[in-house]
Image 1 (tube, chains in turn red, purple):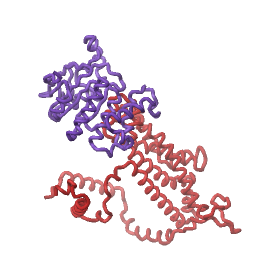
Image 2 (cartoon, one colour; image 1 turned 135 degrees about the horizontal axis):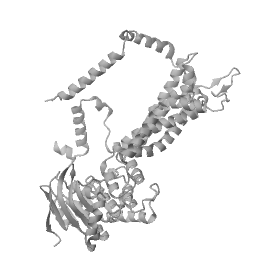
Image 3 (tube, rainbow over the protein chains, first blue to last red; image 1 turned 45 degrees about the horizontal axis):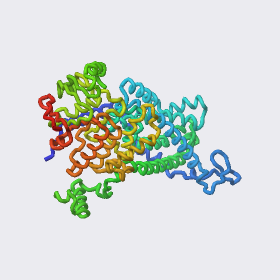
Length: 321
Length: 238
């Protein structure tokens, strides 16, 4: 018999109702939704599709010579390496790499001072205030500030992303540090280890899975965000996207560059999955077949039980059935 | 240590022979309300004590209070254990760093023997590295040295936790059900290994145990908790 948790249903229903009332209060004219699909379809078919893949080629000047986006002669074996997509993406990845790494180096100690299980509140609160301050300004605003001070180019973008990385990664990391089991910390505290010893030999290894995952996520985030920072002259692929979404509009080229960004993000995610496999326990558990996720839970369990029985006749699970 | 200002007075008041003892004076432990009250005990160096009692009665809380992890509700705990490495604590869940190797886990215990100014990023001095190897050998886990702890069996993990504590050369070992639900063969070999090393370093052992026969086998004194009071039973060393 299925029992329904009435309180849970009531809370869920109340939250949905509140969300609907807030939305209705914010939207003054619902008629604007009426033609939205048609407008979107027109924009997609006339401006975006098909993407203009010339962004994967070198620029051809009037004399027939091939050039990189900065005007240098293209002397690469493959024309792709001289294209805006490649050169822009390489700059964006370099910017993201430098800012993620420097940001991480500063974020870890700051996070360790902000983690409630490592430091007392009088230390944790100021550390949290610093981290909150760093991430409360979006990186695009940091980039604007640095662009005013330093001029356009990758440097203001790197500094902006670094500061935002410290604030954002620091928050994720102190939460990961607070989430580790108490027991290893208690042993370390009882034996009298210092803050830095507990951080380096207990907290970081114990939360390594989360820290690594967050570091790789932040790198991916910075690659994606590099496209936005380009809009304020921070260089990279974002600068080319900015050129194409401003007059004279070339949305099909901007769309092609966005697809390139998407592909790079997917590749980073796959690499991240591979790297994380060294510190997760996924390898200890057999992965389910892809099609079993489509089966009802009971049927999938029956299938696995049969499989387990077949492979290991003296398996305790098999015997108990 | 919690209550140190008062504790120094109580240390002074004890006899010179008892200067190395752990003294629990009018101690009450618990969270907000006392689980165990009016504990007055003196534990001499090298003694081993087992605490018995049903679940939730305050055994772990007493152990954590002695370890300095929580404040006593009242009373004092006085001892002259060094700030670093003086107390070895094996929690119920062993407190191992699951993603680190066996060697790294045991090195954490060895690190407590370095000065607190020894940089945390530096590897252990070579003599301590040798001690880590010896500790692994004495607990028969040398062949697991480079394995991550998370893949080890329960018995192997217990050996790592014991090695990590013993390498500290602590003055007192506080072990919370560290034998767990191991099979008899494993229990016997771990008890033998632990006893051997505890005797070598002359440490005091206070252990929480569920199994009475194990407690009697390991301990000189038995403390039983009943009706919020700690009652000492017969001297099993006689």
